[in-house]
Image 1 (cartoon, rainbow, N blue to C red):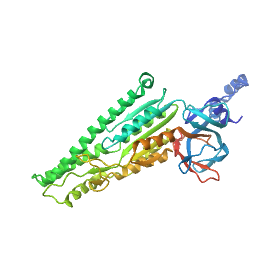
Image 2 (image 1 turned 180 degrees about the horizontal axis):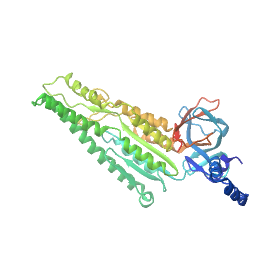
Image 3 (image 1 turned 45 degrees about the vertical axis):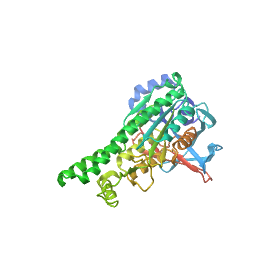
Image 4 (image 1 turned 120 degrees about the vertical axis):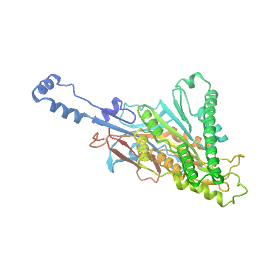
Length: 407
């Protein structure tokens, strides 16, 4: 049996694992040889015996339909542009292996599932209630772990919560936390926006006014910025865990509700004031820090599913509008999250219905292939290796993580 097949048969970890094998036959002769030749021979032997197997969760679609009749011969895998040999392919359905081809005797660790729900919302939408109920009621099961990130805090649900408590109680707690934190963040944002607008009528000196305006803008940017450090922390903690890893990211359309026009300000003047917010940096550029997050999530084999909610933020009277009373802002944030889904092989769903988006994302998380290969000439050089997966002679849409770090 080739070394890669042997490694699979003995149980390689889900994403990537190094296993060294030293032949036992002729042990006495080998010891005597080591005494004569020294440590250099032993180092060379250990280097040659290292075998690495890379795991790639792959989702294949024809239109909106998941393709589940593929065989191991249908897959082509490239690392840094070099064709690799596919060692094994598994079709995963939920927590079960529906089909397996390739190296025998190895069962991927799919029974353990780790979920992260991330809510980037301007205000709490009623559809979030239905999305949470559907997720807890139809997706979560005993043995799963759950982490919830709101605009203000991170919550880790105990692993035995889904055994000790009825699902309705778990859902109620989750909704309460999200609604409370989103509400507090929304109140803070509205307060800052009102302070910003009030400066237009202030009688203070222009120099002081500019300083206060910059301070308010800094607070808004801090409140609404992508939490790169938190995302990196999430990816690092999940990388250590065995099993399936899924992040569902809810983001609301990025708009600022315009307050009612004061009597002494024309409709044309107020939007100009808000345009100034963008000039001061509310639109975010894709930076090296964001790319670091993308590589970290891809390396940890976390599938990120992005649900972009098209309902804008409500004004103080609870009215929503797509254009008339809103100003598009922070437009780069959504593109960052779309790219994060792309490089991790996840789903991007744009919808006004959070529950429908959650349902599609959950289905995507439960139906995929696990493809394994042993990289040719593998070296632990700490660099990011790019992965490309193709389906031979098929015009299918293929989604998978973009690569891994050879560490």
